Length: 112
Length: 110
Image 1 (cartoon, one colour):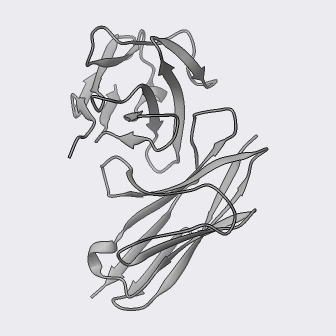
Image 2 (image 1 turned 90 degrees about the vertical axis):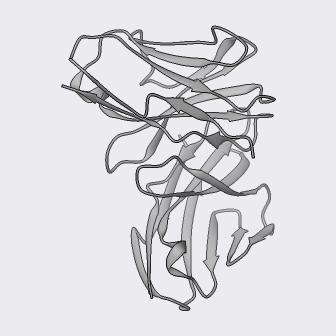
């Protein structure tokens, strides 16, 4: 069964460093998303991406964040200068249409 | 602003003891309501989508129902492997984003 994959599973970084989180969405899906979940809190939307551009973004997704689809299979989230409060699980999701979204296993980001 | 409230926050059941989880929502126009299961340290796993009041979906021991203000996830004769956090999310019309509730943590004891 096709699934969303994410790498790395765990990323530890120093405050102020740049990180890139990687995702491979399900191959025939056209919509891509990033969500995050701070420990003990709800899953929060960051950004959606369709047709090679951002379609929606939340207030969390400020100038420190960017997304890219560098090739036909990968979808990345870059955080330019990490802060302590960026520590969270980051989930990539994809959908065939703008309906059911399928989530990856997540990347746990720890900012020290 | 879309809002999703789930209750109870946590639920402990004995194996075979049926119960229901509640998801109350506020949206300007409902495009879809989604149920996910999340195991500790893992990503949400898709269970159901409901689109209109009166709709019901079933999968094994789970049954989801929808009214204009809330959704229920009924668990019939649960087993220990049903232990997980169950998340409810809504999608507002005109948007593709999901707004999640905090979830109900279910523990089923043998």
